[in-house]
Figure (cartoon, each protein chain N blue to C red):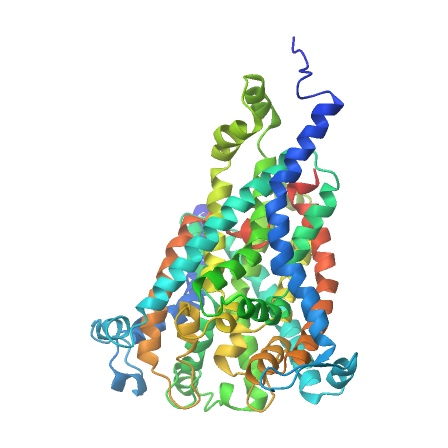
Length: 277
Length: 305
């Protein structure tokens, strides 16, 4: 009797969870459906729930004269290179903060964290002026530099947290065996904090992939990233919904994959270690 | 017996050398952050005292606090502040309540719950730009899905983003939809850190579900709740992407936010000086919030050793 009641309870919870998940992702499903629709079907009432699967919108938006493909590549380029720089600089800084007796360490940490809190909108105007004067407006280099600035504090703070969890004894043992600190870092500490490195890399890439404001301000025609290109579908008069939907789906797919890869660290990453699972 | 190693445990000299290495390690990042964050901030402060328009041929001239005085009597700016706080407060309250309830559902450890939870998180991982446009499509008064569904369940025609008094609520709705997963997964992390035998002990003592919430869950979740509120407050104070991709501040000034105001004056009207002054005000507000947040980071993050 009791187990039957329990089973009923479980079904109820599953049902509730399914409804919540459905509401949460229904807009994704809806643009997925829309991305297959022909132009005329967009305005149909009642809506067409199951259009014929054809990739015409995808083909149209990613080939030919007004192809969005270059912007996709820009986004990938900016994401990869900014992440690379963030990881290299961040690893050294985090290792320094986590393992070395730096004078005024607390103050440095506090300062790095404060930089992270800075609203992008407060620095985007001077960034624009700086990039203009060093001729980096509308180049991928310009956005890469800006994104490194936004993501580096996050990476340092997070990775220092991961590095501190490695027991000191292991590294000390390496040092006793005659490693210098650099070898100890490369051979012992970093391999042991692979989850940390993966987390900061993926988050850094994702923040860059999602960033709009600086990409919008610092680019004009050629260096646009995908979010900027997508925002350009916006117009007061008419939006090409089916095109926007197709491009958005291409944009979202990497994020879905990434979300599943780092699911264990999402809470920790988004709260910068303040909340752990 | 373990012999302490003089070569790297003791010795003032060694200590000194170690701290030197440490400084060298953090030096590149510090310099980088200085040039991409601190220097621009100082530059913004400098610009905020100027009457400087990029579209004008003649040079900038200093107006001191003039921009700030003008801002505080600028209806549009005051409106943008009001809107920003309205969106922030309503969104955060509802996100917290909904997030807690949803966390309770996902906290039941059943098979497959983790996969469902991850799928549930997807909206917050994607940039608000995409969601803004998607919701503009759903909210389209004439052929949008929202009005079709309203029609089916008998709510009738809704103007959504097209009218001043519904537009801001529509933005709140999108905001809540996208960010409730955030509060939910954080509450979930908080709930799962409560040892399960406490519940058993409480129910043996005859506590009902309400008592368990008030006496066990609320006190244990206080810390994560504060962190969530502060993070979401910071996000909302700089709300830009969503407004940019949905209403662009309209209709009229109904959904103008502080960040969008700064963007509009800086990069549509090229009034760099005025825009910088507004940016300074936002910066001061955010510093106020973030100082408290950083305190929590030191508490929770492992950095405090």
